[in-house]
Length: 421
Image (tube, rainbow, N blue to C red; front, side):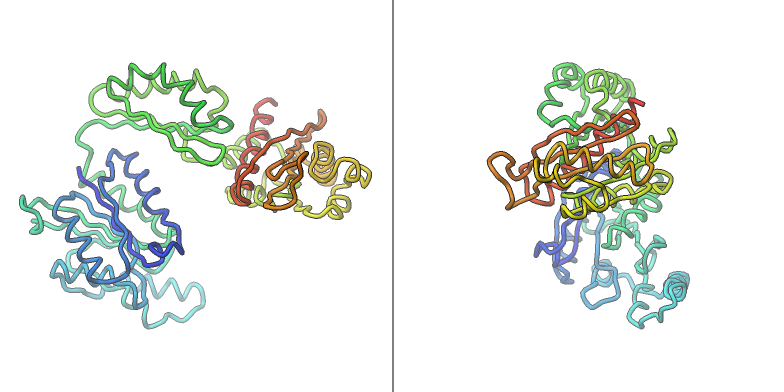
């Protein structure tokens, strides 16, 4: 099956907004057994949208567009696709009622411009959007006059904001695809998420052992993140389940505790789940990550059962006042040191009564480094009832990547500590 994505938006082409749709939708579709064949990004211009859709309809079995379903003058996807297909637009009463309810429930008047979002091309399926005002639309273009073989094509239009697009795809598009475009052969996909091992080192551990399975048709793929690597195992046709199961056994045998989940969950979600199961509590003492770890933990539903407090002690004075870091320790070792990381973790645990306390202190750069402590130096401390210990890491990246890497290292250190309890 041929699948094509069309992302609309001048802001994507200008680099003002990161195009996450391609990556996210590509992965979701691949996990369903549908590989994206082509992806293009076009500006918010009717002629460009029509041309891209027209080209995709000449060959694709499924075309997905993103963006351009809003109420403003540059939201042209709905109108120009309807024109391309010679379909009249009709006001859809249930959609209009949903839009009116959206604003009424927030005690806001509905702008007149939002009424355009209730216009639906004749024959289209409306995909509800409980997270916004732009419904998605699905059209079964049959017979497809743009193709020489007149084969029908499904055309799905999704809103641009990820918080609207992603649940709509999962809740409405996935059932549609399973019903209307089922995978013709058995497809099994398994993703194992790892932390604490680099992509090349990980590949060296598993590729030789997996070579016979790959030769027989197993699809082996990697997706590297900062301090994390996903291993994707997939197979099609008869014996796919057995092939993937054998590959997973090999990967687990070789990578062991580096694997933190085989589900669609983040490292912080795993930590909240593990700590909740063990009835453990956590305190955070952050300096160079600026509250980033607390932000990630509190993004997880149920975090309130685990996280007691997060202290962002960026200055030396704050480290002393709120965590009890000693002035003489700072004077002797500096804020970025094993000793200070240990005292930060001890102080956070003492102040909150948490079972575990995690601390980070480092040099994010681009300034502030020295020959002894270059930019990228970081210490991560972890305290519990048995004592405290700090470990040194080196993350010579830009500030944002430095913070992400440090957060992942700290959370991985915490995960391993929890598992050891």
